[in-house]
Length: 342
Image (cartoon, rainbow, N blue to C red; front, top):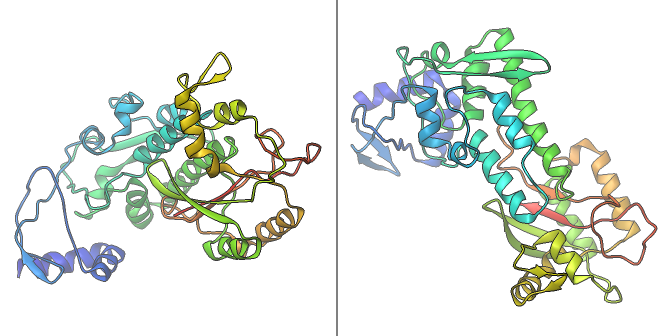
């Protein structure tokens, strides 16, 4: 009976959560401290091991779940979005390692790594606030009054904003929340786009059409802890790659190159990774890409709030500044790689 009442309350408070959890056939709450124990159905079996987690403050929440606060030494006493974002904006992304660190750091601040934790709160929670500035306008979102209205929320901060602020907040709160979410997504993409590895997003079926039409090869790799499939243009065999330059631009550490000479470690790394960034120039590919990107129906839902982790991403650049390997030295339109992050 207690489970039925809790389930009804869950559905009334957040029908989206209710439906999505039912569709998966599971409803788990993993926590650090038990608040109460209740019967629960998991994959058709009844269990009584349900720990409900209570966070006493935003500091408590971040300390326990946001691993990036240690990486970037965030000041938890300030809880200031502007300062946190500034640290990420200034993060180094000149090497593959630093790009990975940026992705991990950013995503752990705004997208909690765990998908099974839930945040539990009540009206007695003190000082659950997040403040900052966007567009020269200060914001100070008070979670206490909002979360107090529903006892079950998401452990994902984006979904907390979406499901709670947008559902219960006044018009000003909703407007500021939308701006905040857009700002997080835009700044992340802008930062990654400046590395030359990330750009606009195409839907997965459009990526597949390019693979089939041009015979691209798929290479699985890792980027920021996520599986990445790289669709690479065939390399022109007549092009002589500058191994030192390639290694230093893409994968090098001090151990890889010493006094402009590739070390054995560098040679090993070069052999393992060279195929991941094979490139070439094909005017038809460029035209097709331009056509695809000009039609909004072909663009993925990446910009939709809260879905940035789950989108299928295509990365490509047509920048002369990014290292390319091509005989067409005078062209300003060069594709270095196309990557689908799944």
